[in-house]
Amino acid sequence: MIVMGIETSCDETSVSLVRDGKEVLSNIVLSQIDIHKAYGGVVPEIASREHVKGITLVFDQAMKQANLQYNDIDLIAVTTGPGLIGSLLIGVNAAKVVSYNYDIPIIGVQHISGHIYANNIANTMEFPLLSLVVSGGHTELILMKNHFEFEKLGETLDDAVGEAYDKIARVLGLTYPGGPQVDKLAQSGKDTYAFPRPMIDSGDYNFSFSGLKSHVINFNHNQKQRQEAININDFCRSFQDAVTDVLVKKTEAAKNQYHVKQVIVAGGVAANKGLREKMKYTITDIPVYFPEIKYCTDNAAMIAVAGYFKFQKNHKPDDYLLNGSSRLELI
Ligand code: KG4
Ligand code: ZN
Image (cartoon, rainbow, N blue to C red; front, side):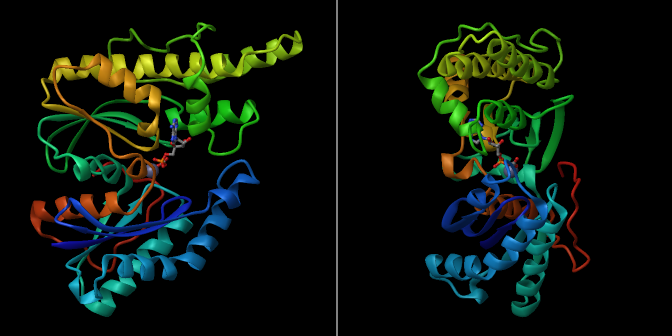
């Protein structure tokens, strides 16, 4: 079964063709990062316009690279939310046009489910499994007993991990998105600043990163006022160690409580080197999987994979009332 994935929820225009929820035939990602960099973050109105400009080209390239014709496609899977509403609507409407034109069934996919299913590309998901979702907008621990059965064990009470990374990076004068740069600087730093590990012993699976973020930003500010230089590598490493200690400890506790077969990490922050190392070093009794780096951040291949498994569940496509929604729970 060949599924076309379409993802436009934020600042990446992406179209992909995937066979049987695993084999990626093409995955074109047109990133707008360089455009939004000048503003220090994504500007929604600009994002929508850039999607309109780029999407036809991205469709053409995805079809060409996969060497397929439109009538080879069995299903179209499109991100319906959460995300920027203007951006989502470009993808949803493009999906409807192709679906109507070529008479291909269409299915809506929730963005976070896509991040989770990115793990089925290099590995095969086996249940029950535990998924740690860490992206720019989400931080959640999800228990899955079967395909498309999501039980939220806990989530962030305030900021998402990626959001905290990007804000810290901004204060340090790094360009958007700062997460990857903080990660890189942390590689050659030491955990010398002893930042707090928020909620590490809270006994539940919730998280909180806004207090840590403020602490780190204030610390930087105070050092500046005292005209005492910070070591940027040590600073990034100290922040990264604080965050990853909490993420790994809670994931390990949930893994032990629910006796899962595997742990899968999902979302943009799954690309983080420190998190990858600590998770694999700490959890050794069951497999811990991360998507390949290119499938960690937003892409349409993950949406095609999720769409495939969602469709397998009850073989019910959506109708043309399908719409984008800026807020959408994991379904
Ligand atoms: O999943 P994603 O592409 O978009 C959302 O759905 O939110 O995640 C983007 C987030 C950004 O906050 C970015 O800074 C962060 O993922 N990120 C990283 C790394 N690579 C991307 N954060 C820390 N370390 C990284 N290596
Ligand atoms: Zn995402």
